[in-house]
Length: 114
Image (cartoon, rainbow, N blue to C red; front, top):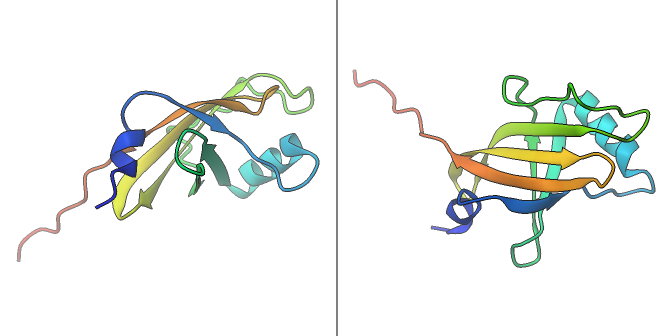
């Protein structure tokens, strides 16, 4: 089993929002509007980019000013990384399009016995 989910669940790690085109802020806003974002952990071999559906209960966009490109946001959502259920949480400074993030290991739901 991969150690990556467990490594990223220990402490905070540098993350970036990478852009495909010339306007990373517009791309991030469009991704948030689609309710699916990508966050890249830069401190792994080659970097680890994770895509996930936003969880509104754990995300916070209230401090964002997308028109000015300022403020901080919290992006959070659940996914499986190497078969391990995790929640990705990233705090991103919109002016820099980078910040810090970590994974939270989630418990697998165990089906009730019949």
